Length: 451
Image (cartoon, rainbow, N blue to C red; front, top):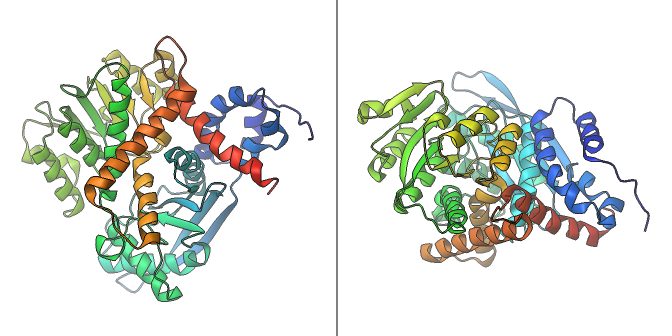
């Protein structure tokens, strides 16, 4: 076996930056993983000789394409679409499709990179991918969204398949958009296969898929607290976001005896000192999903609450925090404020919502801190179970799926413990998740040779 020249972390990251100029999100994601992986592989020559980390940090392919569609006024509109297929060492590419103005190649590459390790942690045979467009569905009619989805799939269909790449939903892509894309895929290919997940229950979808990411983040939080002999009963929680992940995380915390104080959107956050009950969560779900309203309207329905325009909720004292909105929403100063105000556990519901400064603050404080690749893997786990149901032409019952989700999240927690136990009662969940996910993918890549 050839012996490679070992480079240090700064040299490795300098190479990543040179190969990926103007892609800060992707570089950040690689660095967050590499910081832990370099120590782990220091004495493992096979990973160095085969350039495993270098290869994982280079997507198998990035497909970029034009998406033309016609709005309701007859104007021709042009958007850009992407599909990033990062790594399929352990299974077909798997990851969501995001429609949002903030979507760039850098954002999708970071998401696909993270997805590779997240999917490995679930224990299911899924590789990592991600896709999307800078299309903004807000303010668009249903027919405009349908035409865009059909045009997007007219290009995407040639790059995906049930055993090749199985996209799902993400920000801006829910059951409606998945339906439009699946309908177009079926029309073009004349195939009814499990090529997308997040489908409607009537045509191949899975129960609890909608709840899975938020519920899973809370299950992981409960597993972390259990290592300290604690649970969520009586604990106060601050949550960012007010979409699917945030509302279901809030729902599960309430079910487990906790008290939710905040929710947010891009306009600001609401603070309800009386607690956001199940009744109030149901109001938010209806208001955000069906009325397309803003979170600030909550204070009109529930006057005890206050709305804080243009701000994030991290200054509200709490026992636990769940960032469930978007990447880099929780910064270093926010992390310091949370800790100063008594926060003892953080479980990420979004992908990379904490910036590197914040990650370092949480690790230095040795609080219970779960990175998104571990704590928000519940969504893709149930997507993987939907793939299995499609392949078997069957549908599992809700109680079966709930138990499988709990078991998968407990399994991820155990994997993090195996590689993240630092002694003295401190578990570095970031390190544990990074190493456990990397090792599974890396060992599969070694088995395949240089491909």
